[in-house]
Length: 315
Image (cartoon, rainbow, N blue to C red; front, side, top):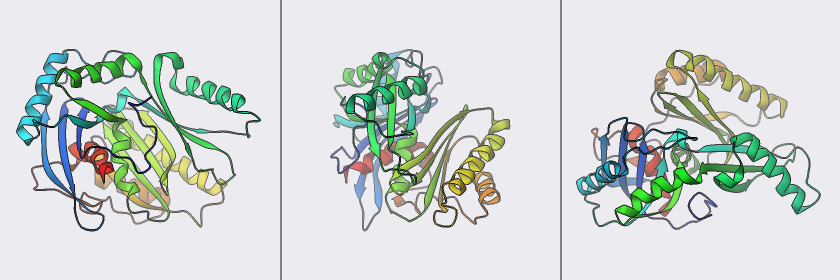
């Protein structure tokens, strides 16, 4: 399946990417800087009507494809990228689902492995696999030696909606990922020991990704009101703290990097909750900390973090 992630291991992708979310659309063109840094060469962000994209895993996302195509054409023109034909695409958070699957015991045969993974994915995604475009990648074993897999799914008919809009412009997306996996690329680049946390917020809740090294340890999407976000975030961090303790990692693996983007909890409040729960002294990292140099204050890192993360995979 070529459209969703199959591997992020030395890929070759364009340095240009599109980011779509309810109420906002962005395009980004990156260039490699010195060391492990990147510079935004061209970019544009438009606030769009909420009705243009209605992110949803179950139902149609794009109410008026022609209107969205016009938005993307104007964005590319505004950014000086009108001739660009190859893109990566960051999907709205609610459009796709991500699972980290753990095998409780080793499969005896390849057929048994496929059967177990299929059962876990259908249960986790809440849909028959025949209706989904699914990509799966094997992760490193957990501390107990159990096999783990990363699985990403989007309904085939919904994926076709986005592909059709790009095709109407003569564009093609070689890599399509949900927003949080684009954003998490910024935490994967430096290879800092310990665990990293991405909190990606939206009006409908948040997605939290805890990374250990270069692999996801926990991916959790929580639908909640802004009023309930703090409590839900606390619960997630308590789960992480308890899991680390149960795995015997409390003294060897610590949460040492925090990235907060999107709506909902502010960076400051999220940092306070993390430090209260884990006993740390973390400060949420900004674009410069993560190696992305923005051309000015008018460009919001929150708006371009996901597409820029995908664009960084070109290098």
